[in-house]
Structures are given as structure tokens and as C-alpha cells.
Image 1 (cartoon, helix red, strand yellow):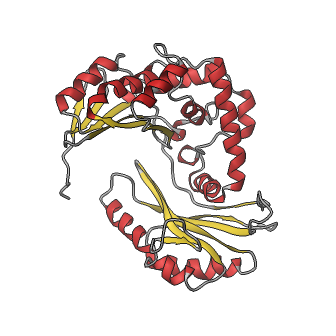
Image 2: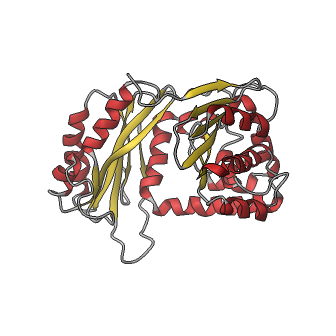
Length: 359
């Protein structure tokens, strides 16, 4: 398959891989990607990638927390970090003239974090709040439960720390996690809009360290299964009580050429909700919008937008929400009809969220 772009990959002597696309423009994008994440967590390190992510862009060896925030705001404030299942991501976009300054910020938070006791405790409080909020965000909660049912460890590890783990964590656990995974041979630095020679020079100057071993390989074998989550009363009195459900299939991996066909099929199925703030016409002609949302008054939302591809495999599917009374018809009849269009992707792993009953 012919690609529309031609990135250049350079392997540095310390193990860091540098990916550059020198396409010119008014802005440049840069990011660093670490071979870490929840997939590599063990029973003793569960949830540490979540906590580590909440400690990004804090104080470092050369910047206080306030200085870091001030500098990032001066550079436009267009930066982010997140912990995924098999990577830790740090990204930013800046004017071309500010590329080196932003690269310095990325290198600082990746290589020289201080992880002060105060920052660590604040990260724990933030994570605890986020985990509590999951109970009121069924789409995110079910996605995590689906992974647990589908893979049973490894890829099945949640992106969120479990609340019972929080009191047992210590600052030293985060320091050790960083030491183990944030090694040069586990780092990929990518840039768009930056000349190759300049990109390599910046990485060589700002990222140091000697070669080290790769992160431990943890294969997540697809198992499949079903799990139900107890009913959660809506947070606000005027919110409707709905049944939520997700279904997924084992599919191809991130590096397989069939990924493009899968993405196309996902767009064709589409989906939406009974109310959308995105303006008229968004997704109105997708299969799920025309065949389900327009015909079934009891369906609040219906989407086929779940795609989780990683190296060596993945899962793909969708879900929705419906009023309580006709939920059985929604979950069986409507799903069955639409899933019939995508048969052949393998066995299903399903997650449902129901009332006080378990199926």
C-alpha cells in the first residue's frame, strides 16, 4: 500500500528512535512515546501508569512546578500527556521558532521529574476522584470492563488504578516505575514540520542516558467473555435511568493492513445520540443512525466507535444506551441485526450494564 507521507526513522546510539516528517508549515508538532502503559503492569505495579501520567509536567530537576507551567503557557499551552495500554504519550504543538524550547520541556518531564511528596499526594487525590467518577460515566467504565473480560490481565489491565490500591502506594513505587520504563531504548521521539537534521540534533542534545533493555514483553491473549455491572443511580435527579451495553470482537492488530478496511467499516456503521451538540447533519446517514436511532424511540445513543488496536491484536465494536423497559429488545434484536453485517471478525467479548438483575 502506497503511503501519502514518507517519515524517516533514525536510530541513535543510546537506543532512542527519532521519527521525522519534514513537511513544512507554520506550526510544528512533536511528541515522545514510551514503551510502557497498563499492558506491562504486574500485580505489584497495577495502576502506576495512571498515577505517573498525573505527575507529568510537574517540577523537574531544572524547573519548579510553577516555572514549568509558566513556560508551557508562554509556548501556547498546546500540550498533553496520557497513559495508554502499551504506551505513555507526551505531545505538543508550537510555532516553528519554539520547537527547541518545547523539546526542552518534554525532555525535562520525561527524564528529570522530581516527584515531590506533595505532587505525589495530589496525583493520588486526582486519581481517586477520577475512579469515583467512572461510576457515572458508563461508556468509559464498560470499555474498561470489556478489556478485563476479553484479555484477563496484560491488555486486560485497566487504564485506571483501583481505589483499594491507592492507600498502599508510595512515592518510591512511582520512582521505581519511572526508572524501569523510561529508558532510552524504550523511547520514540517524533516530529512533524521539523527538518531531519535539526530534529536529530535536538534529541541528541536534550535526551541522554545509555542503552538499556526493552520493556518486558507481556502478551495479552484474547479470551472473550461477559461481565455485568450493578445498576448505578444517576448522579442528578432529572437524569434518565438507562441500560448501557457494549459488544466487541477480536480483530486484527495495529500493524495489519486490514486495519484500514476496519476503520472504513467503522465509519460506515457510525452512530450517534438522540441529542447532539455538534450541529445538524453529524452522522445522520450512517447505518446505525438511520437503522436504529431514527426507528427506535427508546434508544438514547448507539455507536460503533470502539476500536482498540495494539501490537499483536485488538478488539473492535460498539455500544449504546436505551430506556429500561425495552432494553432487552434493544440489546438482542438491534445488536443482532447490525452485528450480522460484520460477521467473520471472530468471537465476541461482551459487557452489559443492567439494573438490579444479572444476566
